[in-house]
Amino acid sequence: MISFESDYICGAHPKVLARLCETNLEALPGYGSDRYCEAAKEKIRQACGCPDAQVEFLVGGTQTNEIVITTLLRDWEGVVAAKTGHISVHEAGAVEYNGHKVLEVPETQGKIPAEVLRDYLEGFYADDNHEHMVFPGMVYISHPTEYGTLYTKAELTALSEVCRAYDIPLFLDGARLGYGLASLQTDLDLRDIAALTDVFYIGGTKVGALCGEAVVYPGAKRPAHFLTSIKKRGALLAKGRLLGVQFDALFTDGLYLEISRYAIRAAEELKEIIRESGLPFFLESPTNQQFVILTNEQLKKLSQEVAVSFWEAYDADHTVVRLATSWSTTGEDLASLRGILARL
Image 1 (cartoon, rainbow, N blue to C red):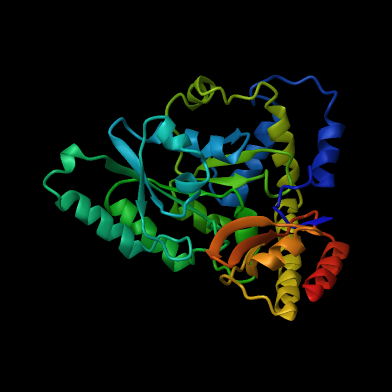
Image 2 (tube, one colour):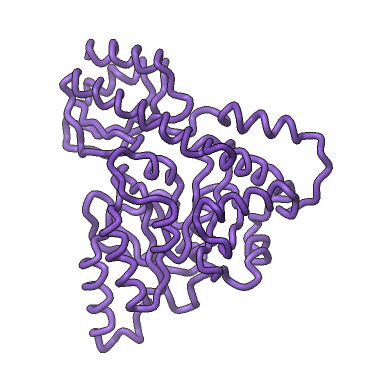
């Protein structure tokens, strides 16, 4: 059995794991106050071109989304997100659990067009009854999106301009940010993202770390007493060093982008294998996630040899599945997949 199920099917990239082992016996202070956390934060500030940015480390994506959103929103506010957004669909209502509604808007291949956001905000404030409604208090997007698609610089700029016109923060979920930055079809870099958003995070869990996400507030607008808010939610890691060491490794000698570029090269080969097999793509993704339409019979047969992710039912007889590459994808995995797909 080979696996293309996700980009976190294995542990940590060997260089990250080596740093954890090398530092294991050092006695360090807790709760992220150690020298590795500070070193990692400084390296991230430099990479973002934001010397005054505030950086915090959290363990996982759902936890990060919930904490960032709920600490920014006021009591009467909700968060605007695409109908297919991760917080809308695949986070078990974590945001709503804490009392803030997810305000869904239409999307295009996972992306919120600026004109859709503008129309939504204009419509909200034009409604004479809006004082009886949940106010849009921030906007959530992900890059890459749930469908592996990417915002262009023009699209992100337009969204940012709408948010700033309405004085609401723009939050970018970067759980797979590395694969967006390394894509052969992107015109955005980390500095662009820092300039155009109010808060974003750099995903580690899906890009080579055992766990961990680095939250960045480029304009030094982190909510007051953020550490206290993290602890209140049971999310403050006593051994914060585990996150700092990993991100220090990821942002040393360009490892984060090296890992991401490797996965993108593997994804390009994966796409060629899928094309050779004659299987149809659900959509074109320029990142490490690829979405393929299979007959239900093909899926049943494939699942005996290859682990893939169910994505959605296409119709009564077909299913959309996702295949993902990562640092742990090998040439042998791809060669085996080529032979298996040829037999479907």
